[in-house]
Length: 398
Image (tube, rainbow, N blue to C red):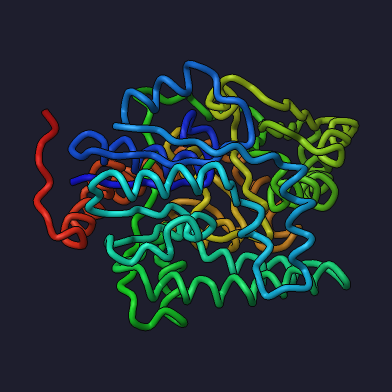
């Protein structure tokens, strides 16, 4: 099968949520199919990254977008009926490359990764298309609107409304849609009543060995720290939850691990007991050195890869309902739930003090990961659907 795969972020290295999923889908498909990649990038791509993807794909087309310029340009669309997301991810260079690829090469299927890439191929009616929405982006903007004040909330409501309308349009031209969790599938089913939708869970790699976590008072959070929900989560934890924990456990530590910390996040390192690392070559080292993973996220869609990775490492998790809703794990068995500063602090204190409870939660979490979040089996489900949509057998690559 010959697939044109479009993604809004260059899919290597798989070091953040959107890259993790797109990379693993791409890697699985290229093992048995011919895949032409069309991708955006807002940064220079070094030879190692370029070579890894080039070796996997039959061709690689990249369009450069510039973060500051695209934000300025998108503001000109405020008086229009266009979601700001679309001009934010528009590259004339990539549009020309994609058009040339479609005109000159036989393509059996177009795979659209994220709604922001749909404008590049939406008008191409002769080739079957599928969309991996991953999350309901429109619902995310509605969540942002409910979490902010005037006048910013009006901009967010506008984006949610217009993206919802655009998601409906995408659904009408795609033969199948994928999402990352059952919750997201239920969200889309409310307004995509004719499009088949399948939840394909993200996978996660399980380490061969685990650290003994029966002692210690170190909490950790990982994520890209210029992403607003992550910034909001760690700042709220530092100011509202961490003091409650530190009062009961004077030796408690909170380590914030992730690239691009905002000034607001960097300032948290002034609080005794809190460390902000910035970019690190291997966040897994910090997971391995922690006692408890905290996911105090107040606004979230889809599935939280950071929580999956912590569970796979045998690190017990305390999460808000927003962070855990994308999971099919069982509260109290696989993780602990804390949905207010007091309850979140109380659950975390329980874990920091109780090594047996940590060990029990960790073992259950690893079992859940093995059962539900295996990349190979989950990607096979997706591949079978793609083959059916394209109406062709998938030949072995020679």
